[in-house]
Structure formats: structure tokens, C-alpha cells
Length: 333
Image (cartoon, rainbow, N blue to C red; front, side, top):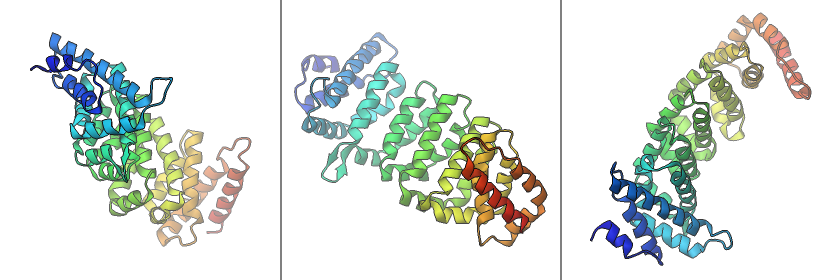
């Protein structure tokens, strides 16, 4: 019996098993650049739209949570999550939008203490690599970005991406000329480094050199948006209490001090202010190593000029106070 015949026999699927098998059957012929393929795409679109309504409710009544959970279990059992991801490039904009909504709901389904769809992805990590790779395809990037960020909410999946070759791609993606895609990639990058403190701490402790070597490249990017967003994130990230060990290590290194001095000279006010919030930690550190002290002394005249010229706007009294304190510390070196 063909997949179309089987689908015809289940025109009104009534159980979670039937719903999922109907969806699975509609995906099986993809991708096909034929009339059969076109018909299959229409069937997929219809089935994903129906699935979204089941998972979200029909507008008048909410979703049946027991049914939603059973569908999630069946989707994992039948390997439909893999079909969702592998066939994304074949789907149109509207059906991808519905599929992303379904993906986010399915990943939140929990049996006892386990997220069934998350466990499936843990066992099929190639799906994460595929989704991260989709940033290279402009029509898929933002859909896949949402799907990756939903995965990153779970520490095991975030850990996999951080430790995989896929993570290195984000240092390229944040410099893409397409602003929307680069910004979306940065959002995912931030989530990877902020959602799970323990995972990130372990990762950075063991990958410190590689990570900051790559991060330095985007701090000094010729792309203004990349430079601005990366220094802003660094100023926030290093000052988080959970990252104190990483921050203390970072401010011991002259090479990173020199990067901040360079950014204090940037033509952008916003970049200079963000750079100052990192630079001030180098200066305020009561246990500055000799190399840092010597670098500050060697550049004292230029630094004082840069700090006196640091722009401040109305309502930035705190910045003025911090700047005056840092100026005094440099003068007293």
C-alpha cells in the first residue's frame, strides 16, 4: 500500500499514534522535484498546520495536555523529529513557521523528570549540527535560530553545542553581512554562554585560550555592528558574579588590556563606553600583575587623554564617577 493510500485510510486520524503516522508518511517522499513531491509538500503543510492546532489549542479551548504528551512520545518513537529537521530546506515559509512553534512545544514535554524530545536529540546530536549549519542559508537562518535556542534551554544540549565544532561557526556567523542573521546568531551565542552557569564555567575553564583567541578577533572586527555587540556582551559577561574566575584570569593578561585600550580609541561612543567597563576592571584590580602595571604606566599619558575625553550623556553620573576614580588610580601608578 502506498503512503498516499495509507493516508487516505486515515483521513481523520483520531489517536496520537495515527496523527504521528500520518505526519511521518507525508514526510517520507521528500524532497522530490516532481508533481508527487509537490503533492507531498501540500500534505506536509496540512499536517503540520493540524499538529500546531492540536499542540496549541483551537483558540476557544486550550490544548489537551495528555494528548500533547502522547504525541510527543510517538514523535520520538517514530523518529519524526529527525524528519522535521532534515526536511526544513524543502519546506515553505509558512509551514516552517508552524513547525518551529510545534518544535518549541514538543521540547517542553516532560515524562516524570525527563524531557522526551530532548532525550531524542541527545541521542541524535547530528540534528543540532544541522540546525547550526542552517545559519548559512538566509531563508532558514532565523527559523533554525529559534529551534537552536529552544534546545539551548536544556544544559545537555547546550553542552554538546559548546564542545562541538559547530560552536566555532558562531564566530563566523556574527560577522555575516546580513544584519538580521548576524544578530540572530549573536542571540544564540549569548544564550549558549549565559543559560547554564556550571556548563559554561567548565567549558571556559578547559577551552579558555581557544575561546578568547576567537573572541578577540570579533572584538577587533572591521564590522562596526559586530565590534559593538561583542564588546557590549563582554562587558556584561565578565562582570556577572558567576564568571568571576574567568574575569580574574582575563584581567591578568596584557594582550587583553591592549585590546581594550584600542577600543577606547574607537570612533563610536557606545563602543568606547562598553570598552571602559572592561578596562576599569584591569585598573581597579588590587592584585595587578607587573605586566599590567607597566602597560598602564607606559600608556598613562594617552590613557588619561582618552578617559578625559570619554563622552557622557545626561543621566550617566555613575559613569562620570567611575571614570574619575579610574583616572585617579592611573595618575597614582
